[in-house]
Image (tube, rainbow, N blue to C red; front, side, top):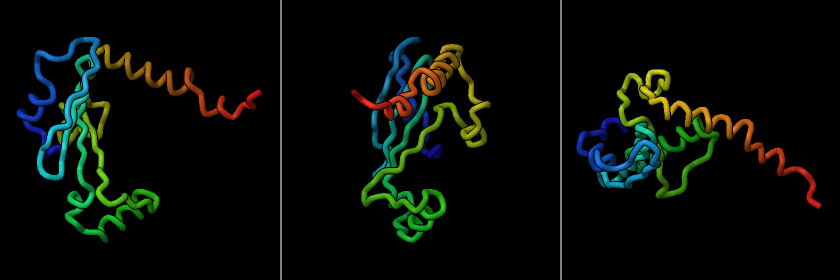
Length: 136
């Protein structure tokens, strides 16, 4: 999906006068081509792109490729007809660093947000365990 990133797409999803230091902003989706849409998510100066792609278009209409990929990577689960593949990465990513979070620049506010999310997932919201308690 990184091949779809352009200055025009970034300008459409992240206008310079929108957002702010404490604003969560979600933009889009905008059509990139007939089978691809993109959205932007921005918080505290950290920008992410989210792409939605027609599964069959991404697989070049090759149903056997979809079956083989599902068997190898998705526990055999096959996507429904007309489903969308979702891919996301930092807007500033390049091909070398897009899968290496340690290489991504982070603002101090983004680091605090990531730590807060990790804390909430591990400590403050243990709801799956709590939901097994008997109700009375």
